[in-house]
Every structure is written in structure tokens, then in C-alpha cells.
Length: 114
Length: 111
Image (cartoon, rainbow over all chains, first blue to last red; front, side, top):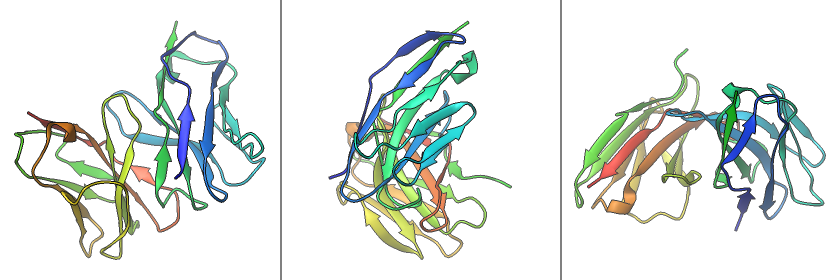
């Protein structure tokens, strides 16, 4: 079945550092890929998405590129802020939008220190 | 515009009891999905409702059941609670095959 593997945390960074969170997936067919963020005590918020190979999703300074050849969707941000401290989840859907079943990775906790 | 709302926010139940969690979807949305998020883990898909019918189901036992009402709101019922059912239960709403929006979740503790 479908699965998502992402690097374990916690990832601790200083403000303005570069952030990378690795995510790889296994799926039949051509899934859509997503990054969700969960702030303390809150639900999930969609951060960005990509629906086909070589698509780049971007939002709030975060970027991720759908790499079919390496089955990866790594999340990057060039300069993190304390407010980026959260848990980040990589996810896939076997349809072109997230209205259908989402398969999530285990999450990566990011802590940004001033 | 209210987003996805879930109730209650927290509750504590005893092993063997039954629980009902509620979800009101974002205005205009017709599809509701439920996820279980154990502490420190990613959400796991339980099931999805569309047009008052269960459209997809994850790998959860029959103790987990649901319902969708004509106004698109939904309930998640769990019977014969186990300690392992303790988790954050997330509801997500969408238009069918479109982006999902998540609620804040219901934290269930089984003692």
C-alpha cells in the first residue's frame, strides 16, 4: 500500500538557518503530494502541494519539488523564524487533490531558537 | 466563515464505554473524513463520508463507525473503548476530490 517516510525529529535550528526536511514516498500510480503543518494545540494546515512530477509547491517561504525519479518531496526554507516552530507532515493522496484519503508520514518536529 | 468545527475539544472515557465525536464541515463542503492521530505520530485515515454514505475506509475495526447527516455534518462513534484508542481525532472537510481543511481535533483519553 501507499506509505510516506520522513526524517525523524526533533530538528533544532537557530533563527535564519536553512531548513530541510526529507520526505520519500511509495505509491502505485501518480499521487499528489502535500506538506501540512501543525502548531501546538491546533489541527493541520495545508502548507503546500504538488500534483504532478516536477511541480514545485511554495508558500510562506517554504518550497518542495515533486521528484518522481527519486520518489521524494523534500521541504525547504531558506531562513527560518521562531514562528516556524511546529510539527511538519508529508502526505500523499491517490487523487489529484486532498479531498480523498491522505496517507501521512510520522511528522518532524522543528524547533527554531532565537 | 467558520472553518471546520469539532466537539467536544477534550473528553475522558473509561475502557469499555462508547463515545461520539461531532464535526461540522466548512461552509459549502460536502465531504467529511476522519483521522486518528496517536501521540507523536502522523494521522491515520479512518473513513470518509460523502452523500451520507461511507465512501472509503481505512484499516480500523468495526468498533469505529460513522454517520453523515443531510446538512453534511458528521459523527464518529467508537464502541468498547480500549486504552489504545486514546488519541487526537481529526475531522477534515472538503468538496469531493478537492483540498481538505482540518478542524482542531478532539482529544480523547481512555482510562
